[in-house]
Image 1: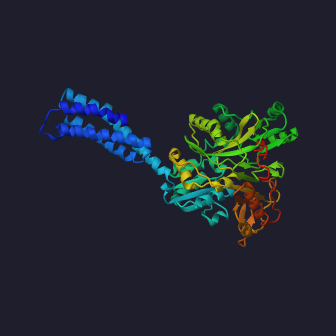
Image 2 (image 1 turned 180 degrees about the vertical axis):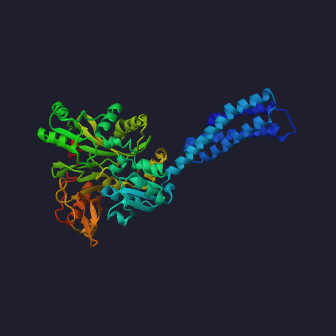
Image 3 (image 1 turned 90 degrees about the vertical axis):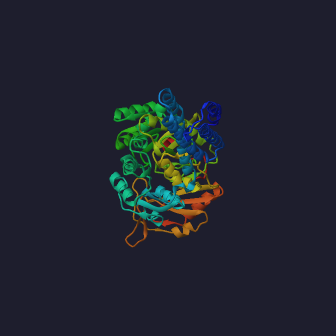
Length: 545
C-alpha cells in the first residue's frame, strides 16, 4: 500500500505539467492532481497503519476506495471522445477500480476482525444449549458467566441446568424439533453438546433455519459417527494413528485379532455412548463384543498415557484449548470395564512442551484440510484422543463434540468468555478472534455414578448433600444423570449422575477439594473412583478410550 501511494507521485507531477487549463472545474489540473494526492495519501496511510496493527486502517481503506471510484468515474465521464476515452476507461478498469476493490476488501476484513477481536462483540445474545448431561451443565455454567449472554436456554437440560437456563422439553436428537425451537426462541446461537444430535443432522437443520450453530454438520460429524470413516480420514491426511481393520463378520474379526495380537482393542464402528470399546487379553471376550455390537474396528494396542485435546474450528481455522486427561476405566488402578469417563483433570503438568501445537500441526489441521477436500468442512469442536507412545503421539479417536468429563475441567480454567469464542467459530470468524486465555491453577472432576454403572445402572435414588458439597472452598457440583422426583426432590436417572469439580492453585489442592466435596454427597449405591489425578501421567492406557 505504501509503495502504491508513493508510486502515484510521478504521475501527479506528469498531470501537473501536462494538463491544459480549462474553464471546466473538473478539468482543472489542480483538481486532478489534488484527487490523486488524496489517493496517494490514503494508500500510504493504510499501509502504515496496517503494518502497525492500528485498526484505523479500516477507515483510511474505506476513504481511499471511495476516492478511487470517484476518480475512475471522473476519468470516464469527462474524457474526450476517441483515444482519450479509451485510455481513461483502461485506467479505470485495470488500475483504479481493482485498487478500490482491494481497499474495500481490506476494510471489510479488518472490520470483521475488529468485531471478532473484542469479547464485547457478541452483544446481548440468546443461546440455546442442546443436551442434558454434565458436559452441557458445564457449557451452560460457562455461558451463564459470559456477560454478553442475555438469555440462556437448554433442551432438554436437567435440574442443575434449570438453575441457569430456561428448559424446553424437546427431543434433542430430532433435527426438525430443535430447528423449530431455535427459530421460535429467535436464538442467536445454538450449541450442540452430545454426539447423537450431530450425527442425526441437528446442526444442518439449525443452519437451514437461519440460526448460527456451533457443531459440525451430519457428514463431518461422521468422524465420530463411524470409526472406520475416521480412520479413512486419518489415513488420507497422513495422520499418525494405530493400525486398524474394519470387520463385518466373524472370520474378519478372527483374522484381525490374529494380526494385531493381544491386548485386543475392539471398537464398535458406530456411536456407543463411550462404552463401545473393549480392551482385553481374552480372545473370546473380544469376539463376543464384536458379535454384540455389529461392525467393529479392531486396532493394534497403543501403550502410553492418554491426552484429550479440544480444537475449536470454523471449517478452516482452529485453535487449541487446554489439554486434559480423563479416566475411562470404571475402577481404581484402571481396572474394570470402559465407561464414558470417571473423572478428569487439567492442566497437565507433565505434558511435553508444545504438545497442543504439535497436535494442531500434525493432526487437527490435516484433518480439517482433508474434510474440506471432501466437501464436508468441519465447524465445531474436534476432539482428538491421543496416546503418547514411545514412538511419538498417535491418534486413538476423533470425536465431533466436547468430551465428557474433560469439558468440565477445561471450561473451568477458561478465562476467555465462551459465548464469543463459540460464536466466532460458528460464523467463520475464528481467525480474527483473540487466542483463548486461561486461569492459573488446576481443576479436577470426579464422577459419581449410579449403582450398576456401566452395565446396568439403577435410577430413582434420592441425592442429598449437594449444598454441603458446594460449601467446600473451591468445589462445586455439575449435574449429569439427574431428574426431579414426584415430590420435587433430586433423584438419580442412572449412569453418571454427578460431576464434582474441585479447583485450586495446584493439582493437589484441586484434587483435595473435589474429593472432600464428593464425600459429602449421599446417594444409595453411588460410587466413584478414588484415584483421579492421584498419579498424573500414569492415567489410563490410551487404547481404552
